[in-house]
Length: 330
Length: 250
Image 1 (cartoon, each protein chain N blue to C red):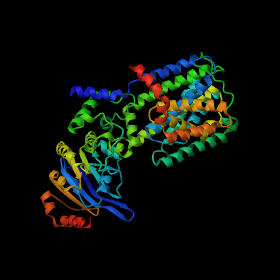
Image 2 (spheres, rainbow over the protein chains, first blue to last red):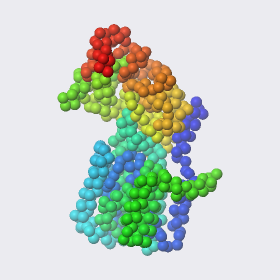
Image 3 (cartoon, each protein chain N blue to C red):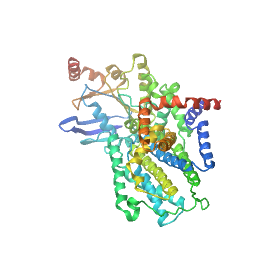
Image 4 (cartoon, chains in turn yellow, cyan):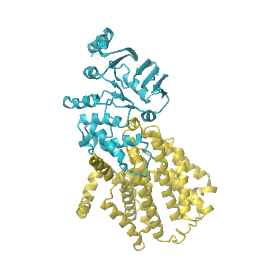
């Protein structure tokens, strides 16, 4: 009996073990901080999109809530960080904290709208919330700068020591660290009993509630959490670019993050990160080679991805890489 | 003394259709009680009213003396009213281990905990093993649920409910669709349920009903027609008429 208990605990704990590829990935990501200047602005964008997609993965990949309006929380965080910087204090970490709280409050309030209903109603409700916020921001130029954007943010140095430089090295280090810390937290959360109950809800809500899972409370909690994450991503963008425009609330942003997450795959935390890398690198390469047509190639890529399937595509491309990694593990 | 589970004048209307008509029903402590009735008699609606999936149009549901009519399904589960499903409602790509961990965690109110890992608690692991052993699932604990033989899935269906520590267990056609070879395991598992769990079996299979139940209620057209000992039910001319009538239709 005792041995069984130990083996059961071990089987459950196995899901939490760090894999070599994960460690390598994070080491490389942090090593990139010390690259010579040139790519840090792009890397910063990747890290921000990755955090935003990670946030969407928490509700879509784990709890099964589809959203076409996730930019609502990204935008709320961006404006909160921007306004705090302009009106109260230039300290970026204070701005980050306020952005997270503001987005979480908005997430909590709007979570009640997505508790019930099918995927279709959730798509419409989340889309609607983001549209409403976009128009509110547009209608309050004295606060948000309206269509001109929120200008005149003078973001202070990080921890009072590291100035945000022109090449984006500090920006990338800041965004990557934020992503890493929030990733660690998300990793712990999805491996907890709370995370397990989310996975059960996504797979079969009826059964989850028949096993005693308080479905609504869990959905409210994870929606609020995901909103907080999206708010952090919005704050990163506002602070590292010292600018907030209405774009942070636009439909395009909600669509992009959904695309990035779907490219990388839902429900495994790295999907958002992988998707963000692919999305941003494609966008960067395509738009520098064919500025007018990059959306064409992006569209084509999505169609191929959907038809061929991520599994087969990545097996083709990544098969060699994975073999190398597997050899390294042995 | 209060019964394990009681309903008083339970009614459910969907517009002009009344699938549950004034049902007053009593399940004693430690009962081995079967609820039978022809197709369309309203058994499923009745179970949904008991478990809180549907809200009744009138009447009350009382669990061990406490009125639970207005409680949400999960709150009823926490108070010990647990059901299984006629058609498997499992989490396809999760393992039985995860399914049982979920049930045990929720019962111990650990489900809102996000700081610990699943399985960090030794008492949870011990309990999962005990449940798995009772239902013969020990050797398949680590396999995705949808790769298990159907009989094992049906056992997991009951095991997951059992892991919620039910006071009252509603078994909805537990052996439905199970191949003959695996049927015995399920019947044994049901027969071996502890005495302090009151069981209501909702079933079509008359062999199972008469081998298991000490008491039988017959639901016809949404109303309780008759209740009694198995021998009396078997001999009741009205019950025979309903079932013979049904078999003539079918």
